[in-house]
Length: 308
Image 1 (cartoon, rainbow, N blue to C red):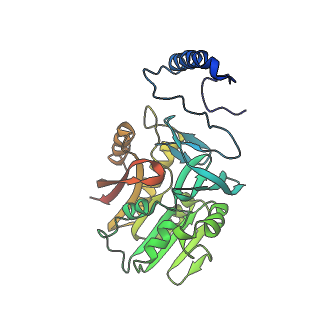
Image 2 (cartoon, one colour):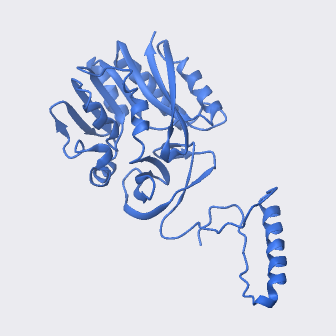
Image 3 (cartoon, one colour):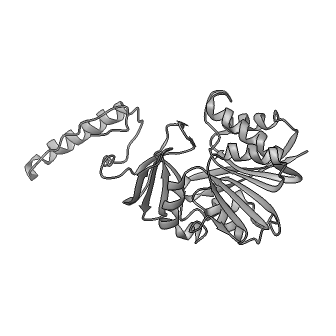
């Protein structure tokens, strides 16, 4: 048995007849008292069934961050109404799953962390600030975005050209097949009239773009969430600094870097991120927005960063 709890409580099952009702009630009260003490609960309305385990996971952490080879989150769990495993494979970088939720539709899960569901259009629309930014005729780079949702929505805005840099081909192929309500048909081929998908390390491709002197109107960071950590240090923070500094160097003077942050319930992490923004290779200014994302079960914060 796989348990995601720190404690395991074995609950006895009693077969009772009518004449033993009093004993059953007494045992239930004793059991409830024991459970309350074990989980440090102060009150309880009912004894809920234990559902963890089974053919697929229904519990995922919230307000966390995902990064290849490195993950950390705040230990809170969300319970999903998942009824089916749609796709599963392990790529060279991560475990890739698509599961089906009765209320959210198909849900992309990477290394046991939920990423985006078919009910999460608000995530993409807030990330791109739909209705507030004009993408017509603009040159755009997407860092990450393997689910294809951002690329699909940007293409509706008639940009001049969009270049998407995604490291994991398995994610692209899985979403192309099982998340079509998000990505449409934009992942079916790697190059179209006004877009190209490049499979590879976005940091290396950004470095080549800097060498070539290329400039863009928008760079989207659809990569790792802001880490939850005591200080803004470590591999994940180093990666974020690298991406931010590289992105600033390929932005036009009027350009913007658009990215998602973390949950509004993690103000310390957001403050650390804003501290990092104040220490980049060039001075920047930023605005932020938030939206309730259905599959995240909470408000998520998004940043729009401009050169000063």
